[in-house]
Image 1 (spheres, rainbow, N blue to C red):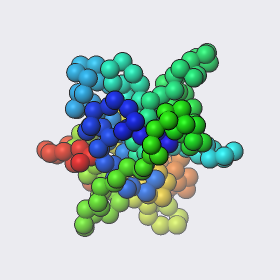
Image 2: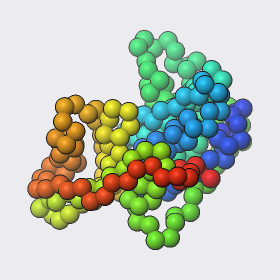
Image 3: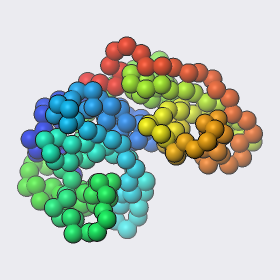
Image 4: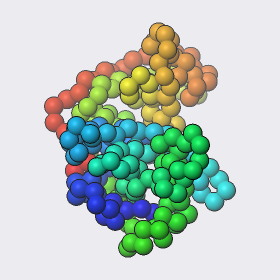
Amino acid sequence: MGSTRATELPAPIWQYRPASLPNGCFVEAVVFADWYMTKEFDGPKTWAKPVFITAWVGSRSFAHAVAIFQWRGRYYLWDAEWGAMPLRMDRYKGRPGITLAGFAELTYRDALEGKLAKAQQGPAPQPLLHLSWPPGLDVLGWAEQRLGSTRPTFRLVIATPDGERRMLGFVVQEEMFLYNEEKGTVGGKITGDPTKHLHELARRIYPQVKDIRLSALKTPAQGAAGSGR
């Protein structure tokens, strides 16, 4: 895999520590992007965003999420397990219509297959150190704390024939997302009535929804819960 220490990136980026959230790759991609934008490593040019990609293990594919960010005119991918690696735009630039998310997808595939490490000819990469789980917090509480320093969050209780399911909701730009440890993160662009959209989104996750109720709403707190340190 790639390694932030194999690049010229500022030390705080390769020292950044994500959380160990089950199925929490998108949550951590959002937290990293928020943190990176706040730090302004490259002045007003600082830019980062979370994206969903398709990743591969052999011939099998799975959904994943990473952050894409720009530093000094170059684009990088950040992953909650392996840190940052430069996007392989040189290798794939001949493909017509490819997006930054597409470059991230292909770069991540190369990293999983060991091609990126060979190209960089650097030391064997190590997984990132993760933050310790705060005592007294459940999974949604930890995710809420991570996201809550920069954006509002809300909790939902979703009633299904099999019992209640709890999820954490948040908004990124014009898209609403729901997260829990069982289903990971599912989201979509908000169109029309946000309440109706929320119900439609919940039914994508749990098709037999009987009822949905809001159990808590939090606005960004002071401090740096998502600082990654």
